Length: 143
Length: 124
View 1 (cartoon, rainbow over the protein chains, first blue to last red):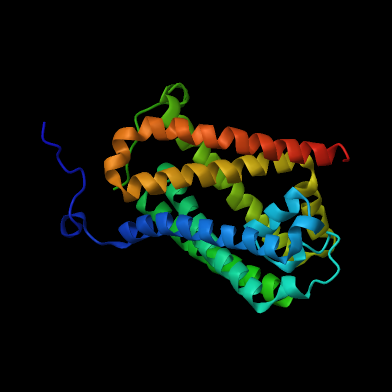
View 2 (view 1 turned 180 degrees about the horizontal axis):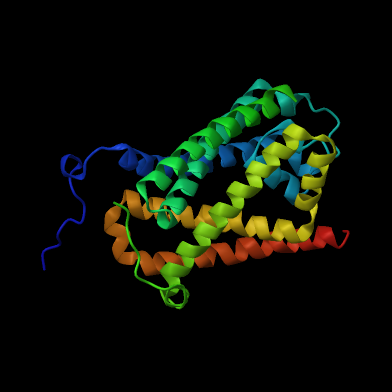
Protein backbone atom coordinates (compact mmCIF):
# COMPACT_ATOMS: atom_id res chain seq x y z
CA UNK A 1 0.00 0.00 0.00
CA UNK A 2 1.57 3.23 -1.11
CA UNK A 3 1.23 5.95 1.46
CA UNK A 4 -0.28 9.03 -0.03
CA UNK A 5 0.81 12.39 1.28
CA UNK A 6 -1.91 14.03 3.31
CA UNK A 7 -0.51 17.51 2.92
CA UNK A 8 -0.99 19.90 0.02
CA UNK A 9 1.90 21.94 -1.31
CA UNK A 10 1.86 25.55 -0.22
CA UNK A 11 0.92 26.81 -3.71
CA UNK A 12 -2.32 24.77 -3.65
CA UNK A 13 -3.10 25.52 -0.04
CA UNK A 14 -3.20 29.27 -0.50
CA UNK A 15 -1.36 31.72 1.67
CA UNK A 16 -4.09 33.91 3.15
CA UNK A 17 -4.51 35.57 6.51
CA UNK A 18 -6.30 32.61 8.13
CA UNK A 19 -3.49 30.29 7.06
CA UNK A 20 -0.92 32.68 8.54
CA UNK A 21 -2.87 32.86 11.80
CA UNK A 22 -3.11 29.05 11.86
CA UNK A 23 0.66 28.73 11.71
CA UNK A 24 1.05 31.67 14.12
CA UNK A 25 -1.09 29.84 16.72
CA UNK A 26 1.22 26.81 16.57
CA UNK A 27 4.47 28.76 16.58
CA UNK A 28 3.33 31.13 19.35
CA UNK A 29 2.48 28.06 21.47
CA UNK A 30 6.08 26.90 21.09
CA UNK A 31 7.33 30.43 21.79
CA UNK A 32 5.27 30.58 25.00
CA UNK A 33 6.72 27.24 26.09
CA UNK A 34 10.21 28.68 25.56
CA UNK A 35 9.38 31.90 27.44
CA UNK A 36 7.81 30.02 30.37
CA UNK A 37 10.81 27.70 30.65
CA UNK A 38 13.08 30.74 30.49
CA UNK A 39 11.10 32.37 33.30
CA UNK A 40 11.12 29.26 35.54
CA UNK A 41 14.84 28.59 34.98
CA UNK A 42 15.62 32.28 35.56
CA UNK A 43 13.66 32.27 38.84
CA UNK A 44 15.50 29.16 40.04
CA UNK A 45 18.89 30.68 39.14
CA UNK A 46 18.03 33.88 41.02
CA UNK A 47 17.38 31.92 44.21
CA UNK A 48 13.71 30.99 44.05
CA UNK A 49 14.57 27.55 45.47
CA UNK A 50 15.10 29.01 48.94
CA UNK A 51 12.65 31.88 48.99
CA UNK A 52 9.53 30.74 47.20
CA UNK A 53 6.79 28.16 47.18
CA UNK A 54 5.72 26.07 44.21
CA UNK A 55 2.88 28.51 43.46
CA UNK A 56 5.23 31.50 43.37
CA UNK A 57 7.53 29.80 40.87
CA UNK A 58 4.52 28.98 38.69
CA UNK A 59 3.38 32.57 38.92
CA UNK A 60 6.85 33.72 37.91
CA UNK A 61 6.96 31.22 35.05
CA UNK A 62 3.64 32.24 33.55
CA UNK A 63 4.43 35.93 33.76
CA UNK A 64 7.94 36.92 34.91
CA UNK A 65 7.09 40.32 36.34
CA UNK A 66 8.37 41.59 39.66
CA UNK A 67 4.95 42.37 41.16
CA UNK A 68 4.33 38.62 41.08
CA UNK A 69 7.08 37.98 43.64
CA UNK A 70 6.51 41.01 45.87
CA UNK A 71 4.44 39.07 48.39
CA UNK A 72 7.12 36.42 48.99
CA UNK A 73 9.98 36.75 51.48
CA UNK A 74 12.42 38.23 49.00
CA UNK A 75 14.89 40.72 50.46
CA UNK A 76 15.84 42.55 47.29
CA UNK A 77 13.50 42.99 44.35
CA UNK A 78 16.08 44.70 42.09
CA UNK A 79 17.24 41.58 40.18
CA UNK A 80 13.60 40.57 39.71
CA UNK A 81 12.61 43.84 38.04
CA UNK A 82 15.43 44.22 35.57
CA UNK A 83 15.06 45.21 31.93
CA UNK A 84 15.53 41.58 30.86
CA UNK A 85 12.51 40.36 32.86
CA UNK A 86 10.33 43.30 31.87
CA UNK A 87 11.21 42.59 28.26
CA UNK A 88 10.53 38.84 28.63
CA UNK A 89 7.20 39.55 30.32
CA UNK A 90 6.22 42.00 27.58
CA UNK A 91 7.09 39.45 24.90
CA UNK A 92 4.98 36.82 26.69
CA UNK A 93 2.14 39.34 27.06
CA UNK A 94 2.11 40.31 23.37
CA UNK A 95 2.42 36.73 22.07
CA UNK A 96 -0.16 35.49 24.57
CA UNK A 97 -2.67 38.24 23.83
CA UNK A 98 -2.48 37.68 20.07
CA UNK A 99 -2.77 33.90 20.54
CA UNK A 100 -5.68 34.24 22.97
CA UNK A 101 -7.69 36.81 21.03
CA UNK A 102 -7.30 34.80 17.83
CA UNK A 103 -8.52 31.76 19.77
CA UNK A 104 -11.63 33.66 20.87
CA UNK A 105 -12.28 34.65 17.24
CA UNK A 106 -12.03 30.99 16.18
CA UNK A 107 -14.55 30.02 18.89
CA UNK A 108 -16.89 32.89 17.98
CA UNK A 109 -16.76 31.88 14.30
CA UNK A 110 -18.25 28.51 15.23
CA UNK A 111 -21.38 30.15 16.60
CA UNK A 112 -21.63 33.48 14.77
CA UNK A 113 -21.94 32.63 11.11
CA UNK A 114 -23.32 35.70 9.34
CA UNK A 115 -20.75 37.85 7.50
CA UNK A 116 -21.87 40.99 9.34
CA UNK A 117 -21.58 39.24 12.70
CA UNK A 118 -18.11 37.98 11.83
CA UNK A 119 -17.02 41.49 10.87
CA UNK A 120 -18.24 42.78 14.24
CA UNK A 121 -16.36 39.95 16.01
CA UNK A 122 -13.18 40.91 14.15
CA UNK A 123 -13.56 44.60 14.94
CA UNK A 124 -14.23 43.93 18.64
CA UNK A 125 -11.33 41.47 18.84
CA UNK A 126 -8.85 43.89 17.25
CA UNK A 127 -9.88 46.61 19.71
CA UNK A 128 -9.65 44.13 22.63
CA UNK A 129 -6.23 42.93 21.52
CA UNK A 130 -4.75 46.43 21.18
CA UNK A 131 -6.31 47.62 24.44
CA UNK A 132 -5.12 44.56 26.41
CA UNK A 133 -1.61 44.87 24.98
CA UNK A 134 -1.36 48.56 25.87
CA UNK A 135 -2.85 48.15 29.37
CA UNK A 136 -0.64 45.11 30.04
CA UNK A 137 2.51 46.86 28.86
CA UNK A 138 1.62 49.84 31.04
CA UNK A 139 1.19 47.57 34.07
CA UNK A 140 4.53 45.87 33.37
CA UNK A 141 6.63 48.97 32.77
CA UNK A 142 4.98 51.77 34.73
CA UNK A 143 3.44 50.25 37.86
CA UNK B 1 -23.86 33.80 2.86
CA UNK B 2 -23.55 32.40 6.31
CA UNK B 3 -23.33 28.76 7.24
CA UNK B 4 -26.38 26.97 8.56
CA UNK B 5 -26.47 24.23 11.13
CA UNK B 6 -29.09 21.50 11.09
CA UNK B 7 -28.31 19.90 14.44
CA UNK B 8 -30.48 20.58 17.45
CA UNK B 9 -28.89 21.38 20.79
CA UNK B 10 -29.82 18.06 22.52
CA UNK B 11 -28.31 16.13 19.58
CA UNK B 12 -25.18 18.26 19.76
CA UNK B 13 -24.83 17.68 23.51
CA UNK B 14 -25.28 13.94 23.01
CA UNK B 15 -22.43 13.75 20.50
CA UNK B 16 -20.11 10.93 21.50
CA UNK B 17 -16.78 11.96 20.07
CA UNK B 18 -14.90 10.16 22.84
CA UNK B 19 -11.23 10.99 23.53
CA UNK B 20 -10.48 13.46 20.75
CA UNK B 21 -13.75 15.31 21.30
CA UNK B 22 -13.13 15.52 25.03
CA UNK B 23 -9.72 17.10 24.46
CA UNK B 24 -11.25 19.47 21.91
CA UNK B 25 -13.95 20.71 24.28
CA UNK B 26 -11.59 20.93 27.26
CA UNK B 27 -9.09 22.85 25.12
CA UNK B 28 -11.86 25.28 24.24
CA UNK B 29 -13.10 25.66 27.84
CA UNK B 30 -9.53 26.06 29.09
CA UNK B 31 -8.68 28.64 26.45
CA UNK B 32 -11.79 30.68 27.22
CA UNK B 33 -11.20 30.39 30.96
CA UNK B 34 -7.65 31.66 30.54
CA UNK B 35 -8.64 34.49 28.20
CA UNK B 36 -11.26 35.73 30.67
CA UNK B 37 -9.02 35.21 33.71
CA UNK B 38 -5.92 36.88 32.25
CA UNK B 39 -7.93 39.75 30.75
CA UNK B 40 -9.57 40.48 34.10
CA UNK B 41 -6.29 39.97 35.95
CA UNK B 42 -4.49 42.55 33.76
CA UNK B 43 -7.41 44.93 34.26
CA UNK B 44 -7.31 44.32 38.04
CA UNK B 45 -3.58 45.12 38.23
CA UNK B 46 -4.22 48.24 36.16
CA UNK B 47 -7.10 49.45 38.33
CA UNK B 48 -5.63 48.31 41.68
CA UNK B 49 -7.58 50.07 44.46
CA UNK B 50 -10.81 48.49 45.70
CA UNK B 51 -12.06 47.06 42.40
CA UNK B 52 -8.69 45.49 41.63
CA UNK B 53 -8.37 44.02 45.12
CA UNK B 54 -11.88 42.56 44.91
CA UNK B 55 -11.01 40.82 41.61
CA UNK B 56 -7.64 39.61 42.88
CA UNK B 57 -9.25 38.22 46.04
CA UNK B 58 -11.17 35.77 43.83
CA UNK B 59 -7.92 34.66 42.22
CA UNK B 60 -6.33 33.95 45.56
CA UNK B 61 -8.99 31.43 46.59
CA UNK B 62 -7.71 27.88 46.29
CA UNK B 63 -10.80 26.60 44.46
CA UNK B 64 -10.25 29.12 41.71
CA UNK B 65 -6.57 28.19 41.58
CA UNK B 66 -7.50 24.54 41.08
CA UNK B 67 -9.79 25.54 38.21
CA UNK B 68 -7.42 27.93 36.48
CA UNK B 69 -4.45 25.59 36.79
CA UNK B 70 -6.55 22.86 35.18
CA UNK B 71 -7.28 25.27 32.30
CA UNK B 72 -3.66 26.35 31.91
CA UNK B 73 -2.04 22.93 32.21
CA UNK B 74 -4.53 21.12 30.01
CA UNK B 75 -4.43 23.84 27.37
CA UNK B 76 -0.63 23.82 27.41
CA UNK B 77 -0.22 20.04 27.13
CA UNK B 78 -3.02 19.60 24.60
CA UNK B 79 -1.69 22.57 22.64
CA UNK B 80 1.73 20.97 22.50
CA UNK B 81 0.17 17.78 21.12
CA UNK B 82 -1.77 19.77 18.49
CA UNK B 83 1.37 21.70 17.54
CA UNK B 84 3.51 18.58 17.16
CA UNK B 85 0.86 16.69 15.19
CA UNK B 86 0.12 19.67 12.93
CA UNK B 87 3.74 20.47 12.21
CA UNK B 88 4.53 16.79 11.45
CA UNK B 89 1.26 15.70 9.75
CA UNK B 90 2.36 12.07 9.34
CA UNK B 91 1.88 11.68 13.11
CA UNK B 92 -1.91 12.00 12.67
CA UNK B 93 -1.91 8.19 12.36
CA UNK B 94 -1.00 8.03 16.04
CA UNK B 95 -3.44 10.63 17.29
CA UNK B 96 -5.24 8.38 19.80
CA UNK B 97 -1.97 7.19 21.29
CA UNK B 98 -0.89 10.83 21.52
CA UNK B 99 -4.04 11.60 23.50
CA UNK B 100 -3.35 8.74 25.92
CA UNK B 101 0.21 10.02 26.32
CA UNK B 102 -1.16 13.48 26.95
CA UNK B 103 -3.34 12.23 29.83
CA UNK B 104 -0.39 10.28 31.17
CA UNK B 105 1.55 13.54 31.42
CA UNK B 106 -1.35 15.69 32.56
CA UNK B 107 -2.70 13.57 35.42
CA UNK B 108 0.52 13.28 37.50
CA UNK B 109 1.54 16.92 36.96
CA UNK B 110 -1.91 18.19 37.83
CA UNK B 111 -2.08 15.89 40.85
CA UNK B 112 1.20 17.29 42.20
CA UNK B 113 0.01 20.86 41.65
CA UNK B 114 -3.38 20.17 43.21
CA UNK B 115 -1.63 18.61 46.20
CA UNK B 116 0.54 21.73 46.60
CA UNK B 117 -2.42 24.09 46.23
CA UNK B 118 -4.62 22.21 48.70
CA UNK B 119 -1.77 21.79 51.19
CA UNK B 120 -1.08 25.53 51.24
CA UNK B 121 -4.84 26.18 51.47
CA UNK B 122 -4.96 24.04 54.61
CA UNK B 123 -2.28 26.25 56.07
CA UNK B 124 1.00 24.49 55.77
